[in-house]
Length: 76
Image (cartoon, rainbow, N blue to C red; front, side, top):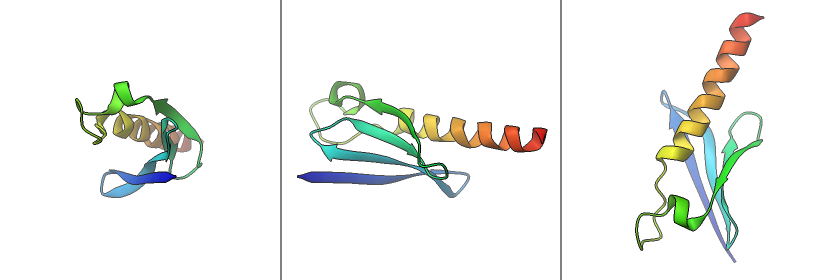
């Protein structure tokens, strides 16, 4: 078994996590709600032949969730 946990930051705050329970999918988790925001296969997220994930797509998912929560809070 192997696990991967990478904090994802936005505006200097941890807003989500990239997690993986190998050999499962790479999953983006919201740091506040703990809900899954999306998942990726190795082909979708790894740089070439490396084991290093490209975190840009994962970061965008976490940023969007944070922005959506902030917009919803302003509407209350």
